[in-house]
Image 1 (tube, rainbow, N blue to C red):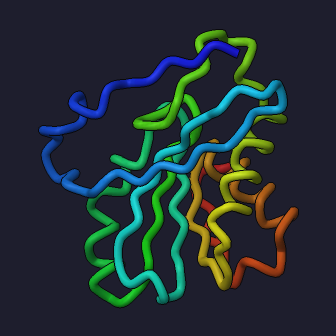
Image 2 (image 1 turned 90 degrees about the horizontal axis):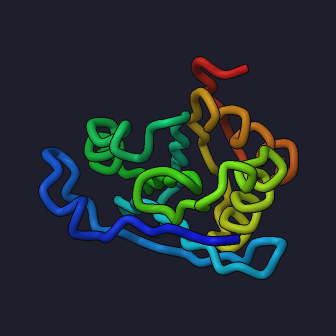
Image 3 (image 1 turned 180 degrees about the vertical axis):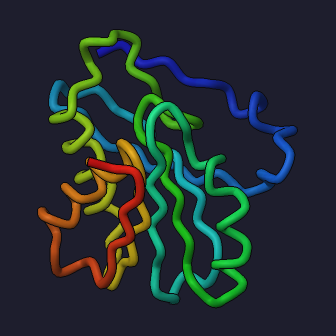
Length: 149
């Protein structure tokens, strides 16, 4: 699988999005390394809130939610789905399958070692996020699903 990557400097001057980038690299089923970006704000030992955006948006969508949630004492994680935002982008449309999204995000979620997660998901993030809940039910405490099917 061929991967494209948006240079970090393209995100440097976005108003209201001064969050430090965090990256985790997982391996696709074909052996290709895939870098997934996420925002990680608030105390690392706090209960996590996982924000999952829809398509074609990215974690920028949650930029106004992140600071107040972190200020309230939560660890706020806003992931960019593969193909969106600062995450790697497969070059071929055929590489964007629901099964691959499930696999990519399952690998990312496992590597993050999150427990007692409150999931806020919408649109595609809901489809993928609810899959994570079904696969890892003991890791989730709450789910808020919006505009998803």
